[in-house]
Image 1 (tube, rainbow, N blue to C red):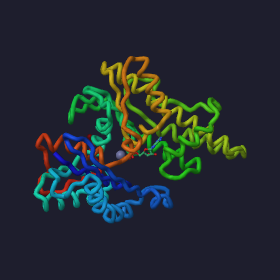
Image 2 (cartoon, helix red, strand yellow):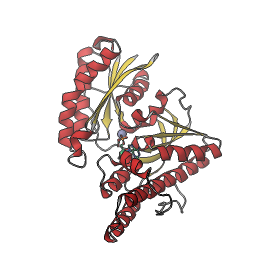
Image 3 (cartoon, rainbow, N blue to C red):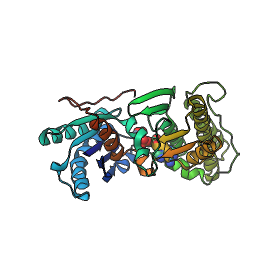
Image 4 (cartoon, rainbow, N blue to C red):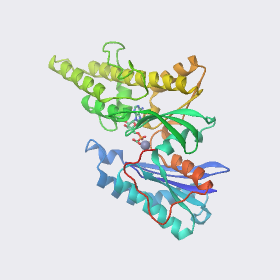
Length: 335
Ligand code: KG4
Ligand code: ZN
């Protein structure tokens, strides 16, 4: 089965071709980050308009890259949510229009299921069951995964998502959007242990997270340094490192707990924050001690992309699932 995958939930137009026998054949991504940078975050209407401009050309590009024609497609998968409703509607409309014209099934898939399954596209994919840590701009969740669609929520953030915390900390440190990679780069110059930030909710049982207190702690630290006239580059780097170390430690402690609680020997990390090097290193160290394994996607498939949607859609389309005639766009959609 040759499946076209379409991702337009936020600020990346992602398209990919996945073949159930041959694997990933082609993928392409257009990032709108530069367009939104002037505004300090994603402007929904601008995002929708840009998806309209980029989506069909990208679909034709991946088909050409793979030496395929539209008529070779067996199905189309698109992100149905969660995300910005206008942006989701663009992907859903194009998917349904193409599917209708070609007479092939179309299916809206959950964006976070896409992230969750992205490591399946790598050479050494994890076997079921596994524990997944989903860490993106909108979600921080621990999920037990027994198979496609067999998800049990173990814990989640009661307030901000980890990526959102990175983006807000970045703003406080005068860095551009998206902040995660920029905070991580700045933290490389940081002095270890100059500041110690809290590890929220690690001193009590359970697998939920909270990152809004860490955000306030960061703001207070930045303001105190500024008032002392000491918010120089080194101090900003030291704060970035203290912040990143606190997020990584907190996530690592909860992942360890989830592995112990479920008895699973495999941990998957997915979503934009899973590209973070310090997080990967922390989880590698922790899982090695437990004689468990950690799995993640290549960095370009940690953030939003079409490949993860093509893969997730292929699994479900193969099982006979498909949309009715209506486009599905669900801005808020628990997994
Ligand atoms: O999964 P994603 O691309 O989009 C959502 O579904 O939200 O995740 C984007 C988030 C942003 O908050 C971004 O700052 C964060 O992932 N991110 C990172 C890194 N790369 C992206 N956070 C920390 N370290 C990184 N290297
Ligand atoms: Zn995402």
